[in-house]
Length: 245
Image (cartoon, rainbow, N blue to C red; front, side, top):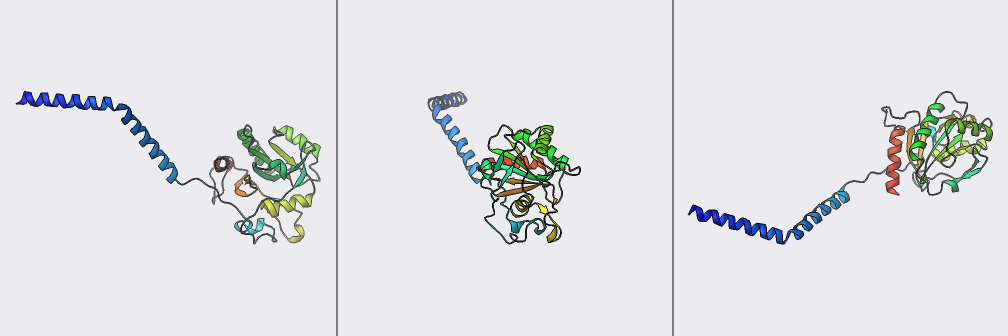
């Protein structure tokens, strides 16, 4: 009886092996299909990373011109026209459809600007091969930062002309843009509007001219406070925008 049972078991195993061998491609395809289906469902259900869209009403009123503080949606960067380190006129057209990072600085600044410029140069090294990303720096002392001064500064800092524009121009226009578009500049009394106290902020702008983030341009990779992101986190957010696009 035991011998018969053993033979039966062996026979069953052979039949099973024969069955799986005969339909091996079917089962292999079924496994592959199942794995792909699970991955697709996971990706579909997984929350996608996204960045907020900032409007004037979302920002500290100290950094926003009073004429736009009430704006809660549809805020975009205004058109502009300034001169870069090569004497070329740079406008919004040069940044059309691009993701870019903007800041405000001046070449004689000895406090926060050196760190900001070094961190912007670090960003340049990370995005230099991506045609979808550019950098933009506005001088807040355009009467001092002439084209020749900006060119010297650009050479010292390793600025790549095709990636990073340092801009000079009419002082009032630059300050207007800083407070009404980029929302990054503190001022004192109304009569001090053009005695601007610039901040350490880097501003991330998407391909639709919308502000998607503010970052401490003096902080490359140190722990942050009060939810303010550093420049390394800015690079990660750029990648989120690239996926969004």
